[in-house]
Amino acid sequence: MKIIGVAACTAGVAHTYLAKEKLLNAAKEAGHQVKIETQGTIGTEDELTNQEIIEADAVIIAADISISGRDRFKEKKVIQIPTHIAMKSPKALMKKIEDELNATT
Image (tube, rainbow, N blue to C red):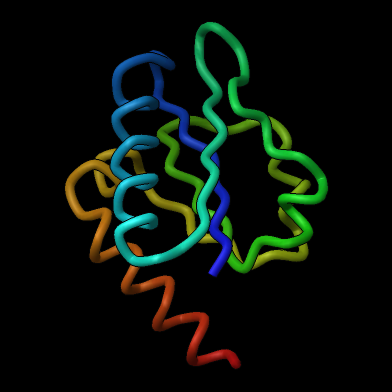
């Protein structure tokens, strides 16, 4: 499965990068391809390409604030969570995504 996402917290620093790291590790451990964009005080990093968005099976938005460019994902399965969920329960989140995608196919 191909998973993409965006991580962003209110300060745009610590929780953003912790959420990204936890999501990357959990997705890779589950055997998925993953890329997570960050939006924070220093701007956007690891920006998702149009091709990555097209190819994605699911989008995770781990954010405590509004993110820019959300309309890019309007045709995708989007899972919106606060950053603390990504940090505390990333494996459970991957399982939930797998279950939801399997239920719709």
